Length: 241
Image (tube, rainbow, N blue to C red):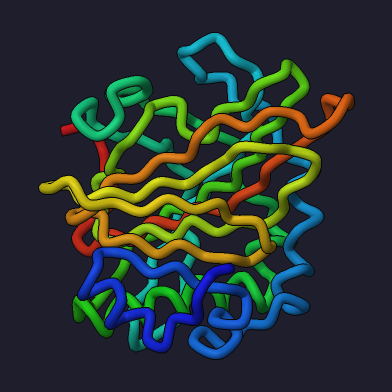
């Protein structure tokens, strides 16, 4: 059973991460599971990720970018490619990946705006900034081919300041253990996120993370693991030099 986190910011400062139950999310971010559930339908309409270099077809994805001035509003930026250097993502780094944008009805939803702003406000209590550059990634990992890999690049950092990994749904799968380890040490924790709207918040400079492959539970091949990953960076979006 996941323990209650009394103060997510303090947990991130002390340990480099905080694992929030849905009850924690309601108390600390002011968002209930019922409010967030209104976002879930969009995951059934994610297009396939055509950039996977391991030859798989198990990942579906959308991506959009935002800025958040902590004294003003959340603003969606013109659509742009997702890019990471190879030292953060050895498998898919170094190339511009143009994913379809997140659907407008999703980004216009009050719960969406409140979620991104609440996390930005929380991270700003740890690292005061004027503006966050936010990348939002919707993922669906399926088991139609037997195995799906949430992190085909392995244990990694994202090259940002903070990361939120949010479980949206998990259906008829086993596996998917999340692992968080010190970037400059050997200590680590392992757990499996099972309740929708459980959130893992990470200080990206201090920890590395990964999630193990998923397999179908039972005889069917229709299992999925849906997540929303939000990254927060202070100075700019990552881009080729």
